[in-house]
Length: 437
Ligand code: S3P
Image (tube, rainbow, N blue to C red):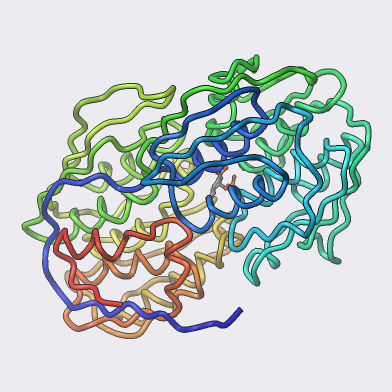
């Protein structure tokens, strides 16, 4: 694959205004394809994210013989094949940049009768997979990886899986979901216990498609051998994509923005809590439940933010939003301290180091620590050149930093914005950000 350096050029200043809906939730879109494929009957998905990550999951299921129509403007029709209807993929399944695809599929494929191989891009091939290989091996699966527990993953089919009672060593919805998906194919009961609440879209969607999952606080349990029934799946707008606009509108004086029908699953709303603690003006209106997930309209106006100590219990609830929150912290009055977020070092990039380097390039005092960062806010940011390290969320966060910069910002390696938010540049321009590709 040829690698071109897609750049974002950001003009300094401006403000964000308007009213729109950001694209569909990435986590829910992955799960819609996976569970819709395993269900009996047709599942009609609306609001599907047409980003490279969720499209990689869609392509993987097509490669395993599932008939999937679309996406057409966020609509996807999946002709489910039932729990035992997947076909052996003719080639390794290439999952691009998508950690969710690889970790969830590893669980699901460990329970199939056929062998499979999962591959990804350079970033995904560096990310830790031992966290899913270990519990799956304990269930009786066989998964071979590169030394160090990285992809490609070679999954041997035809193994008899046994249910386990697994205490997750880290707060990870991907690991929890992987174990539960393998549990669908295991003999007996599979339970996970998480050290802190993580996104529960897998549990909700399983229940929505008729599979009994017992959830009791940090514990989720299911019995293997059940069935899923296809149905309508509504994907809410992605709060992780909304987060760039929540931060942008908060830091840019004069901003006034409404984001419609944003997913408000309580395991995902840490970004709102953290911004509100920093003094952000975010009004939550029109709360409703769509397809088993809460949504609301968010109205954001600019605010004078203050630095805070981020409560550790909010870390897993905002895990994907820290790059954007660090930009908010850089524009806040005073110091912001984050601890207990070592997971950020094993995301699409090392988000602690890459954000610290980028903020420093804009003249901000940002000191990385092993499990977090200390950021001293300042009234204005400098301009400069940022290396996003191919990490979509780093690129979009620094794009928003331009709203408070005194000179232009050039961001390198932005192609992966297409993994989660292909419409980002168009929507940001429409809202008033001076961004060009
Ligand atoms: C995800 C879970 C999170 C998150 C990722 C998507 C999911 O990862 O960072 O972007 O869809 O389950 P971890 O569960 O590894 O923290």
